[in-house]
Image 1 (cartoon, helix red, strand yellow):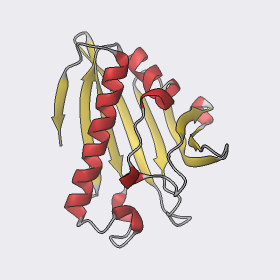
Image 2 (spheres, helix red, strand yellow; image 1 turned 90 degrees about the horizontal axis):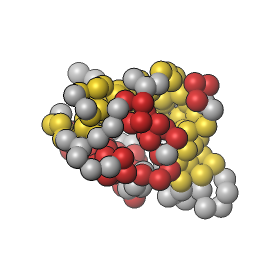
Image 3 (tube, one colour; image 1 turned 30 degrees about the vertical axis):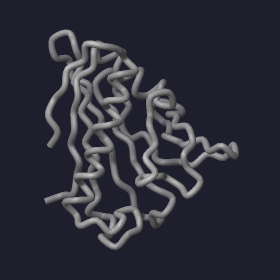
Length: 164
């Protein structure tokens, strides 16, 4: 079985607004977690640059930018896929994040699937010595918190979906 995290929450908006908030306003609602910092100099401010041919970066307080990943699929308002890496990853290591925005009544279910952790060795510093299941659980909790922050940013009356 592939190592992945899958979480979803509903937000009080249509998919177009949810996609816009997730991408264009990520620097406003994103909440860094020291356990999952991208670089030793984190936290910075996240931003998507360039849309379909773009990248996700963390702009550090020094003014430098760390490239977290490249956009692989930019399909507003339904789907976004981008690569994800930390500074400690080897050149050939990366994971992948897929974000789906599905209309559910008058809300949007935002689903995050963060996959590819099986390509990052168990002893890698990014895993913090957690056994595989515990690491995935902690990572899922962080994504769930992030989606909660997105939901609060978009506005009230958002519902909640289960976490897997």
